[in-house]
Image (cartoon, rainbow, N blue to C red; front, side):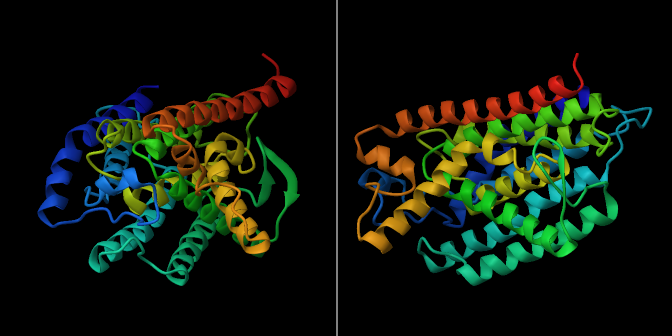
Length: 347
């Protein structure tokens, strides 16, 4: 428990204190957000707001994770750095690098488009391949499809790698689509990472039942660091935002959620816990499909949070209500996980 508090506390402190310094740094270099011209008119005032705040989030998570492993807090070496923990960090860092390149190109080209689709896909394939290979080689990760536990559906290594790519790509892009209003992604991710803290810690405390993982505590530490980093960043990212996380932040948060889902064997539980992100992604898919097939839009604007803005909801109203939805989905996912344990193991 001390490790979780240390990781979350240090990460939160770094984003709380470090973000203003990063804001001044990016302002000095003129790194600001480029806003879609076809977006809600009220968003045009955000043009030039400092971005790439995901750099601070990732730095805070890494520092929080390793700080919790310092020998002064673990004199008996009961909480060593593990491959599971490093891979959970690496999944987010890998996607964060792709996001950073995207943000940098947006700044250099002075437009709201950065990396092209081919570049993003190549980067995501590389991250997924590395994660799949390292997970199979250095952890007890299984190639079975899982919900709250492995389902007994064994995937050949090729299909397993493809499954990793799909989950990483879908999750990171869904979080990226959600990152369209001040504080929406940071607040929503806080709830989902909080759910993974509970799940991973429960697996650690009941490792005799969850025999497929013996490093649950380290995964809980990573998730706790993300909770602290997102919460601290939200202080500056809440409306009116002083800084945006950019694709550096949103893609990395999605990548870390996917990594945690694989390493805790809760892959199919992730779409439930991150139900808000699924809603956002499906709203874009439905909008594109309807327009191309029927020539009509189902929403006034996609993703769906912009639809509610155009209906007259204030930005803060949309964000707070979507936070409630995100919290409900995360809580429901944890409840399903716990219900499985009760039905099988009992108390």
